[in-house]
Amino acid sequence: MHIINTFKGIFIGIALVVPGLSGSIIAIVMGLYEDIINAVSDFRHDIKGNIKFLAPIGIGAVIGILASARIVLWLCQAYPLQSYLFFTGLVLGAYPLIFRKMTKSRYKPSYIIAIALGFSFMFIISFIMDTGADSAYVAINSLESASDFGILFAVGAISVSFMMIPGVSGAVMLMVMGHYGTVYNAVGMSVDLLGYLIRGNFDAAAETFATVILVLPFGIGALAGIVFIAKILAFFLNKWETIVYYAVMGLVSGAVFLLISESGVMRLDIDSGILPVLSGVFFLIIGLLCTVFLDKPNKSKE
Image 1 (cartoon, rainbow, N blue to C red):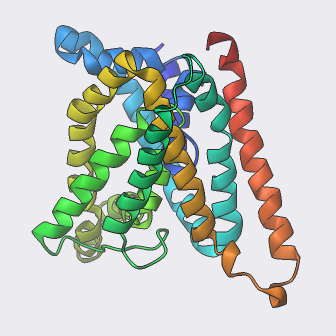
Image 2: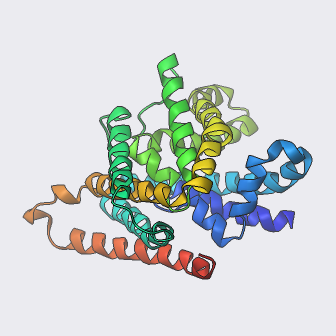
């Protein structure tokens, strides 16, 4: 069972790297979501048992992240139009799941406020964390100040907290905040660090470590998000699930708008030709179908 959960964790880890894929949806597909939430929420009630359950999943997730971080980051930089529209398709594919959650209770006009707040929140976060550059590029190369530490702490807390909600992608939250490249560049370079240490190239290892250490404040923030903010989200999901998902609809809609803007599709002109547009639309549809396919097995459980 532990080995099986490690393999399941690898797929969850890959989903955490790919913007638009929700790690929570993959956990649902793998049959782990509720058990993970319960293990995190009631961690102190059975510390040994929860560690035995969560550790293999966590190890698998780390392997998945390390295996895919460099590839996804390179695709974002080399093929931004196709990559971002593919991610947009993945996000759009979460709409059916969110809509089913929204329609569990009778509609109230006041729920529109939740959509507006979610949509606005996404733009506020994007504005506050704006790095002034493409989110796939590295905004912070090393910890130069307490401000850098605080920014990455906040990025970790926010992205991981919202990742706990099925349909919301933590990687998309990183993109919206402009620090996807920062975080996953640091994660990817941890493999380089290990290689330098094995070969005894300590000068290169020291230089690489200055970037890898960025994972520390992000990880502390992520842990804070899981322990504190995620509990608040779990409380709201248990008490006001419908209104939470109306807000999620706003968040996801804001993310779609921002991803399309990031893709550069709005900057294409007549001289660009029809090929970039067609390839972008193709990958958007592929992304949409991927998420719809992943969500299919759970329709009977909704």
